[in-house]
Amino acid sequence: MTALRVLIAGAGIAGLAAKRALSLRGIDADLVERDPAPRITGAGLYLPGNAVRALRDLGLSGRLAERSQPVLRQQLKDERGRLLAEFPVSTIWGEAGHCVAMRRTDLHSLLLDAVGESQVRFATGVREVTQDGTVTFGDGTSTRYDVVIGADGLHSAVRNQAFPEAQPRFLGQVCWRFLAPSASLAADTWTVMLGDKGRTFLSVPVGRGLAYCSAAMDSADPRRPAGDWRAMFAGFGSPASDLLAYADDAHFAPFFEVDAFEGAHPHVALIGDAGHACSPSMSQGSAMAVEDAIVLADKLAGARHRADVPASLAAYRLRRADRLRFVLDQNHRRDRARHLPAVVRRVVFRHFAKEIFRANHKDLLTRP
Ligand SMILES: Cc1cc2nc3c(=O)[nH]c(=O)nc-3n(C[C@H](O)[C@H](O)[C@H](O)COP(=O)(O)OP(=O)(O)OC[C@H]3O[C@@H](n4cnc5c(N)ncnc54)[C@H](O)[C@@H]3O)c2cc1C
Image (cartoon, rainbow, N blue to C red):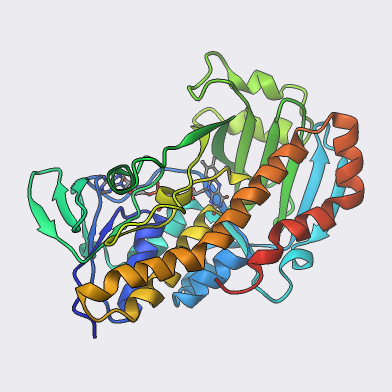
């Protein structure tokens, strides 16, 4: 068993998955979270085949099945609600994994239950990290770690300290997410409606009579626009027109991207959004976070002493770089396709959606 001193900063999806993956390999880690209590915010998540496979590899498939809704079909529609394409998700994922959707809080609590809430030190933010892995917390105390895992999200303090050159870029899109009654939707179908100006409306049932909905549009400014944003979707047909009535308390989020693949640090690894936040077009955020956690735990399982850590972290970065870059590239492609002129977009998706979606995911079918 390794005697490494490991710190995980952030108890979101990435940090909790890392804690679970490490403990399955007999590695103990301190897990700190800046917030004073577990997060209970957020709307929903679509988890594609590789996310479900990664959660299965953490021994969580039973709990996942209890708390999620299987997704069997994907549908693309134009903004009036006319069908452009429809295909089973197995077209993309084959045997690699099935797809589900769930409330964000359910994934979070599933991971927290698996780890044990008492394992998280809440109200403990990381403030500084030095080259030798010494971490200073918000209360001014310091500890030297052999490994510091930055799982502290898009605005990561760990990344800012260890890889200051990797800064988030605004992607020119903003979005609102909310839960709505799912009665009018097919229980097993992910549906996206595509309009002009990057307007996209996604809906997918998550179980318990609810659907996760997300409405995105182009914006030059990452700040929340003034006025009722729903006016921008006024021309959208069903199901958007019905579901928008439930969006009074929608969560607002601008889309940012960050890539810290190139940086190297002898004692710091980044996982999840801290290392590679991206547009949610491909719904790969959770999948990449959990895959990161598993690969990093595998590499650290081979390190016996502090002196082994830099090589293990280099092996982790090398193993992940191509896959993460693939996801970022595919997100860019998807975003470009969504911005094609309406007539071209309709023709492209009507005739080639299945092939485009398959190509978007081809490198993700193999294990990470
Ligand atoms: C609009 C939108 C839709 C999305 N839809 C999907 C989807 O359908 N499917 C999907 O898989 N992904 C989706 N994603 C992406 C997904 O939400 C993220 O990839 C995922 O939440 C990243 O998890 P994380 O743990 O890396 O970061 P976070 O969830 O941000 O967690 C980071 C944690 O670190 C804590 N923290 C922050 N700073 C510190 C500090 N200094 N010290 C200690 N703790 C700290 C935070 O409080 C937080 O708990 C979407 C994203 C957006 C914006």
